[in-house]
Image (cartoon, rainbow, N blue to C red; front, top):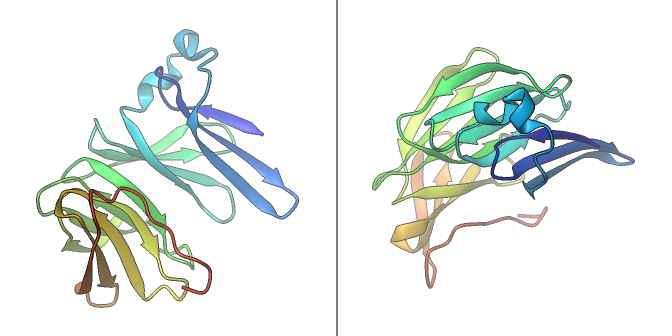
Length: 182
């Protein structure tokens, strides 16, 4: 297991091979050595992360910096930073890994689709208030986004960026997932 320390407060990620693929863990860890190396200060308010299927790259949503950091998993080095229009709150890769989707916090939250190979913003569309926890449908056609302060979940058709449905929930959705069969 390789550990990458993301900030001095104890947030971090552990990435390591397992028998059946990569394991990614995000949560509280000990920040051993962060104060000596200064590495932890490179990530300002990490709120979400996603690792590429090949395990080479780690994308980290840095809420306080309004950036997404691109980290080389092999050496823990930040190789790029992408500025966001609002604080990033969630990340997900399309099933083919060709696009990174970033949700941001705002009253009408921007959702960005980025081509990681070029850093180009392929599309931007709006979700609800403080969008977070983006989840892809298994076929890659739809994106589900929790709209925390609208108390609903948007179902967005990725090809058009059109919201096809908003599902009401009782209170402040902040996390979501789908079963493999959708």
